[in-house]
Image (cartoon, rainbow over all chains, first blue to last red):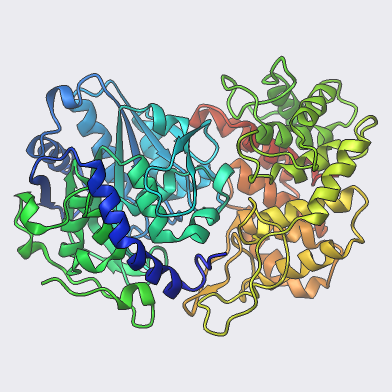
Length: 333
Length: 287
């Protein structure tokens, strides 16, 4: 039995131990990315209508245009971990969700759906109402799918970082042409940081994995992140860093107004750039370090930064001493 | 226009989506699966145990029951056995389903979540050793699956089993210092977490008749406070069940359920689980 979410020292050591094996496994698969992955970053100080222009510019700058989008079904997966209408730093902001939906529609997507499987056992409609995403769905006539109770399909676990032989995904995730992780820029008390890869925890159906996706915590949070993304990597990543969260994330931390949106087709590279903006070395985040060996680009030299340069965007996110997953993080800048 | 009888409206909405095989999908166009079927079965039984449509629901649930008594989410998802409690609640007291109910009760009594001896260095604040029920095999016990098992075992005549008493102690241990419950964590890294309606409702329902009112007074106050703001079916259903169990049922319960039914078109209709929880709230519990 592993201790999962209770004593993280054990699994952190475990991830380090499997890192070399995992790296070989990931490298053996090869990867389909160009030598350098494009990542777009733009300043965005407010949640306003300008975000459509920002995200549209990002799609163009990272090659997500033409046949890459036209006629495709798009599933936007925001991070709606706990609904609090007055705390914009917890969830992906509805203005970002709305802007992403509009940008993909403008780019020619055949359909845009919003899907989330809240990590805690919550009333999914209450989550939508309190997060503000409910208004987006109603006003913009976007279909919503509760991924916790959706129909399901089973895939072979292509990561093998955990002992789970298979992974069960919602049918909507398996059927969509483009899966877009629309994450929040946050520090996290179990994973160090939560960005587009960690956001994929929320696609795993609670009806199968329980709440708070407990099977995956017992299997190891960081290993599970790698397994999920090895098996169904998002096709695109957008990170809401307009107001992120620092400290005791993913729920109880403080607002971090980084004023930035980060996006691109390589989720590892997007997470790497976002982590650097948080003034954290992505190589010090165990799951990102392993992901960079085959799932995508982590090395700065292999990321083609478009839009704003990273250095002027850096805003050091507060970390909490005594939380092991944050104690091991190293500053980047 | 408000529904004059939300009970009739709930019965109509639920039975109209019953499939030819007797089961339910979460949405009308989906094939039947055990979890929405078990929710619907428990809700229909609570609203009207003599309902003709109930017989096919209970038969369909039996078709998914495994030899050890569990009712899993799917045949290839045996670990996710949490619908067993709902199936037991649906079968209880209905002639012809005694054996299925007995098998499911025996499974529940023999099954628990994973528990760990308390660790003084652990970042979590609750007692991880008290045994309850988990959503799925190999995971920790949490509030809602434990409450569901307590409610099902109690209504089926197993309330005196020591597992039920320990489960109630587990739920009591997860009560937040300032009142209410969430999914089952109290303090993490020295920070007290916040209560939710969906955690507080089932915990209160499961603790009714056990312990003192004073021990849960803060949680009852929290539930009564949040009730006034609720407009969605799952949270409202659970809070209604929790308050009803402690004789604090709001006077506007029926009107509120009607209003929530009216709002369903905002999201293109409710799932079977959402309708069922609203129905269980209107009925005041599993019965």
